[in-house]
Amino acid sequence: LASSGDRSNEFQRCLEQCTRQSCTSDGYPVRAQPLALRLTLWTCTDDCKYLCMHTLTDMAAESGVRAQQYYGKWPFWRYAGIQEPAAVAFSLANLLMHVLGADWLRHGVHPTHPMRPYYLTWAYLSVNAWIWSAVFHTRDTPLTEKLDYFSAALAILYALHMTVVRIFHLYTGTRAFPGRPNRRPLLHAWRALATVTYAAHIAYLSLAPRFDYTYNTIFNVALGLMHNALWLSFALPGRAPFSRFAMMPRNYRPVYTGTAALAVALTTAATALELLDFPPLGRVLDAHALWHLATVPLAVMWYDFLLTDSQDVGWKGQRQ
Image 1 (cartoon, rainbow, N blue to C red):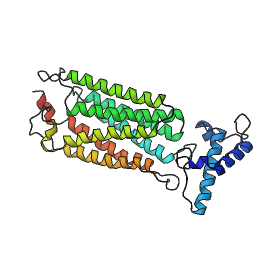
Image 2 (cartoon, rainbow, N blue to C red):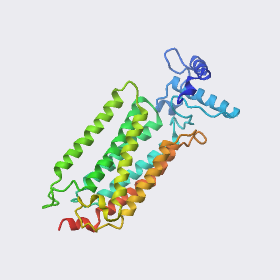
Image 3 (cartoon, rainbow, N blue to C red):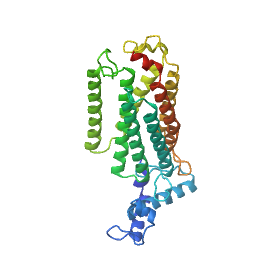
Image 4 (tube, one colour):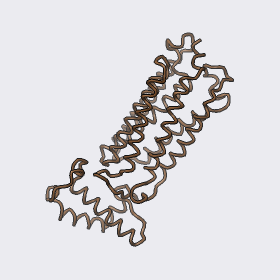
């Protein structure tokens, strides 16, 4: 159903005619392509697929028929060789926010803070994820698709890893917290579990006969929901679920925990956009692009929360 357009007889006839007229026998264009298409590696066959897709979409619009998907994607107008301009623009906006966020963390979190390396690693992994998101939405190929999906999964899994370390104080036992319970063995076990999980995830998607999109979506959504549930629990009055692990008095509850609850609630709501699917408005803006747009202000909110948390007086109390 996700590729009904390219499987149709009308599309195949259009594609055959276009390639016969516009491409040489070895696949090169009869006439030189615009520079933008050459720079973004559009082949003559790719260009014919694009032209036929929009020709049939135009005909469907004139007839009042719903647009079809082609090769698993909705028809988008390209710009300067970029397949999905809106998604690329919003990916770059997220990239900028995480670059700025990493700078905020470097200057705003004390060098001795135990969570500083975790926060910075998450920021760098997020930067990497949004780079490959922009590349993938510029040109969708099997390689750019895997780089995008694998980078996104790594950033999401590391966010969960970082959250568990922060909430359950698995960093204790270091020189920064002398005399506190040594939870380093738990930290090593948790890190090993996360590493094995990611390696198994990549191996399955890479070695399976065909890329399992359903599994990939479930994997990422499940990690995201676990991450959000932990921060929601952190925001509960008295932090009862973690009182046994807390380094601070049981009745201590930072006033900013509501920010964490709001952030995860908005993140969960934004994720719903990722699970929706509708033909792109004006062949430019679809649910996936809107999800990328929604995560831009959420990134700012998360960095603000991490900075506030790292500067909380409760951390100072742990060192006394």
